[in-house]
Image (tube, rainbow over all chains, first blue to last red; front, side, top):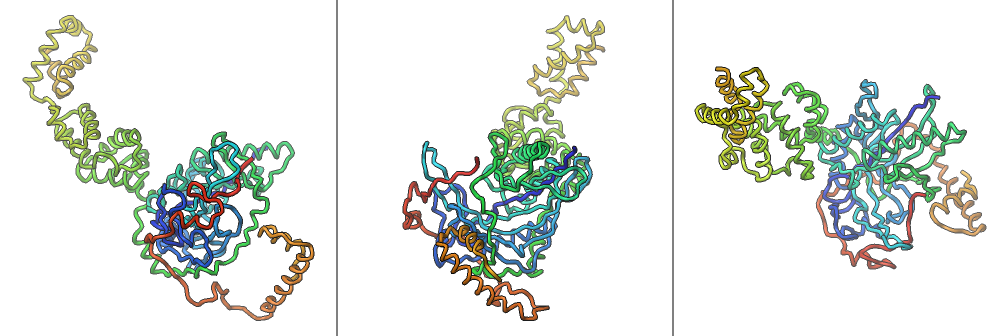
Length: 480
Length: 97
């Protein structure tokens, strides 16, 4: 039997606010345990939550960028369950009346045809604390750190529209890119700034109704997402084909082993007894607020890519890579403003800037030791014939290492290309005199030796001889 | 609306509460009569009345995204029975297998 995969994703994105969603505690990462806490996020009796306006601002922007409807009125609800990382015994979330609904993101299906992945809803909620399990063997206790409790999250829930790992990956990558473009989330999956739960089921191809789904938690990288979907799909198909039944349950993804495991601990946990949180007022968002947020939206990734293709005549691959972050796209455009050769700028970024950024583990090109003016200055020198493209590679390395402008490096190192005919002629004569056998060979018909002579001249000039002139002079001397 | 003994037991277990059979009987009957009383609202004609989102008429209370001082680690752990390494120590929690 042929099986069809059905996947819906819940993405939790941690928002880049300075403070928590309902109190003024800092959200900064890496502080000593339980030092960014107050009566509100510790759930002490009598403490009252007050909503951080910026969380709403961020949510509205995300909604606009994902084609959602912004609810005029939304409200917060309590999701009740007991867990040691949840001090109040409930999580403040949204249930009925979430802030955003009915959005979508476009992807390509496995056949390359465009399709939309629906976004059911996006709501605001608070994160839980962190449980630390001591390394000590046999330790029968855990530690609770509540610095992360009450940090703002957006939960972005997709429709079960995803039919392949390819679609799932594109959807999450697009979502991540949009969140990072908007500056509302750092998108760092390793540090848990984006966490994914995947609802996975299978059904016989052609069947209308969905199969029973399992919810896979703890999927925290693109690789894990792909592995978890494939593993779970196969597990369910094998189970059904062997006469078994898929049970609706929560399973944990084990990234080390690439498998999903059933969880025993939360038998009754799915009865959350949501009810409206009486401590928080309803949230009303007037059109003016939405329009003000719309005015601050940056050009979004898809629009930017298409503009890069048309305005700069760049191939898809270039536009795609350059637009993976706003910083890189801006970096590129600044180079082009200073030196109008988009393809050259793109080549240097893709070939060298990205290489060195990954070597130095830089997340943003803003942290690179060079600026657009460095690259533009180097391109100016190439165009003016002061340096060859070959020498430019050394200049680039030196710029990256020292932060000095191309012009300065060329002067300091004496890298200026030799375009003085008499100087090159001298070198050519020396090379010819030193290699009489090859000269005879060439004149006897072995014209392939031209490459050898060019190499020798370039070597003798330490790469500085203008290659065009070298070729021209060699040819006239050997054949003339 | 009648609340069964099983429903009381279910909600009690979600709330980690333990009751004697006699208490469960009592709560089942008390909760039932409370809900029956509230059901009186069903007698009203509420067509065209917006659901109440909150008992107050006011909406929208915000704070600005500005850090304010909280508690020190010592203060935060002051009432914890087993503070350790700056953390609350709790019974072991494991997920998975």
